[in-house]
Image 1 (cartoon, rainbow, N blue to C red):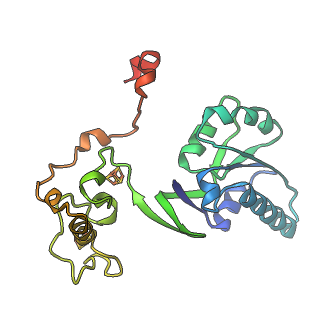
Image 2 (cartoon, rainbow, N blue to C red):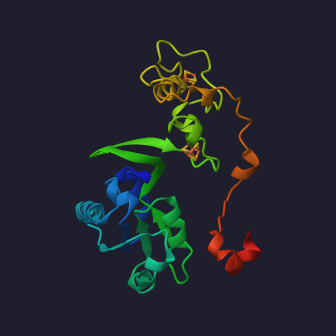
Length: 226
Ligand code: SF4
Ligand code: SF4
C-alpha cells in the first residue's frame, strides 16, 4: 500500500492562513490504514485547525468528508457538490489522490495535508516499512522474494557490492545486506542456481513518467493511448 505521513501542522496552518472556509477530504484506503489520512485523522485535523483559529481569534468553517478512494473516479462524484460552500480543499490522500481531486471539474484549489513516502507494508500497528519502488520490471521471482531495487540502497541487480560486513549493509549497518539475505533465502530454498545469471541493466526507458497501463481486456476501448 501507499504509505504517507501528515505534514507538520505549522506547514498546513500556514497554507490555510488566507482561507475561512476549508473542506478536508479524507481517503479511506491506504492512508487510513497507515493512520495518516482516513476519517479519524480528518476529524483530528479539523479539531486542530478550529482550535488554532480559535486561539488566534480568526473565524473558520471546517467541513469534513472521507471517500473510499481519492484515486478512483468512481468514488469522487459526491465531492463535486460538497466543495460548493468552501474556498479551499485540504486533501489527506496520497499525491495521486490529491492530483485526481485537483483535476475534477469545478474543484476548488487543493492542497496536500500529507507527504507521500513509499510503497510499503504494515509491520505492526503504526510501523511501516518500504518494500517496492514500482520499478516496472519485478525481479522477486529470482531473488527469493526480496526486492534488490528497494532493500539494497544502491539498487544493485547483481550483488552484493562487497561492502557488507557480517551480513550487514555498508550504507546502513542497522540493516541486513539485501543481497546476503537473498543468497541465504535462495540457499534455504535449494534455488541458489537463480543467483548465478548476471541480470542485464534495468530497462530504465520503461520508467519514464508519467506511466500508463491499459488492462488487456480494455485495449479496444482505450487502444489509442497505449
Ligand atoms: S523488483 Fe522491487 S521495485 Fe521492482 S516491482 Fe518488484 S518489488 Fe517493486
Ligand atoms: S551491503 Fe548489500 S544491501 Fe548494502 S549496498 Fe552493498 S549489496 Fe546493497
